[in-house]
Length: 489
Image 1 (cartoon, one colour):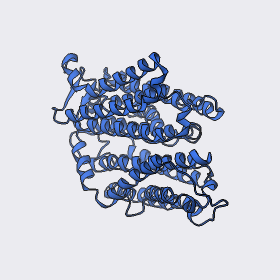
Image 2 (cartoon, rainbow, N blue to C red):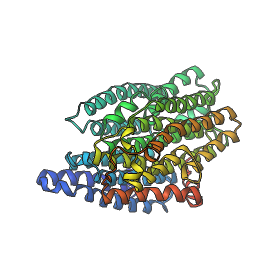
Image 3 (cartoon, one colour):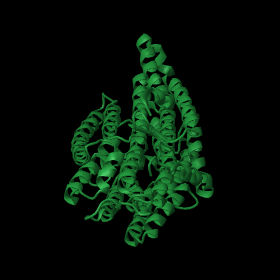
Image 4 (cartoon, rainbow, N blue to C red):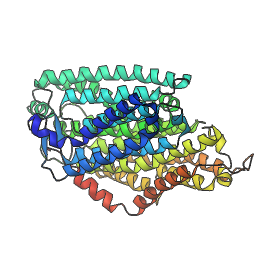
């Protein structure tokens, strides 16, 4: 589709862009508008979501000269990113860390990341993929270092920038190799060049490994995971929660779109059919196993809750990679389902950290000693989130993991399934440590912990989908089924 006709299918992104400019213009006019930035942001996100719903009935096509895709897959992820951003703004409203910041700039940059993620999920051109990934990364670097008076935040931002720059350079070189063999940056043209079988397998191995470096950095998969604990620990806690879900999901969205569109030939059920001469499933399977194992084993020795959840997020990237190993619709739909349940259980856990830190100023696990006596409702909510992250029924995390394990068992990846199950058992150990401290140890001071009503209500709101989706997941699965449709697949 030409540029001008494409604009009517670009309203969600236009609304987000206008919202960013509006917030910055208002704060430049008067600093008094700073206190209204979160309300303006939430209102704009609602408008953008309504515009996304308008696209649902549109015919699937390529827009802006086939640089972006308008399909069910992109609509699913646009809705997901709007939801993640809205919930991040909501938990930021209950954080004392954010109260010390310039909120207009803070929310404007969060919205910029949201815009980048929406564009990335619909990108069908290597140049747009690179530019949108950089848009997400550069904005994320700023958000991580937003607590400028704290050394740990500055250090985290510097480490994030250096590691991100190295991975970005590798990815860009890999993209240039794909351009060299196809003469185009368009994903469909690249697939046509690969289908001919004239490209050297060794050349493809180098190109894809370099490209995977950038994608694995976004999803924090081994060996591109080293930045995660320091960055998550140093960033403001709402941003840690945001990074653990939003950019990770964006990384999976482009990982799935690129490899499913380019590497799957025709309508075959099992992927990687375009690539010959190398066992790609074995490579991704090994990465998946190491990612979940290293993440879980490293989490065992953590005493800080944010660092523990950081390593936990690495492990969950490993679980989701199990669905990517098979590169077929069943496995990839399992990833889409798991991203939704992971959103609610992980953001809920970080909101608990925020709520307690607001009162105690502590993020250490020991600071939760006897919390069930001092703040019973938040302690119960955290227990639900942790059980869901472990994958214990009847919570939503159990259904998500069952779908991922079923995907690899269906393709006879029994060893990977066993590794995943053993890692879930390991994760129960360090998650249960938090529960033990809250419920089985008496507090030193039995004075009730004052959690704000706002944070209590939001914690309760996060608990609901963790329970409902563990019992009645059919509607969400139907939505995922409908959303897994690409142009040209």
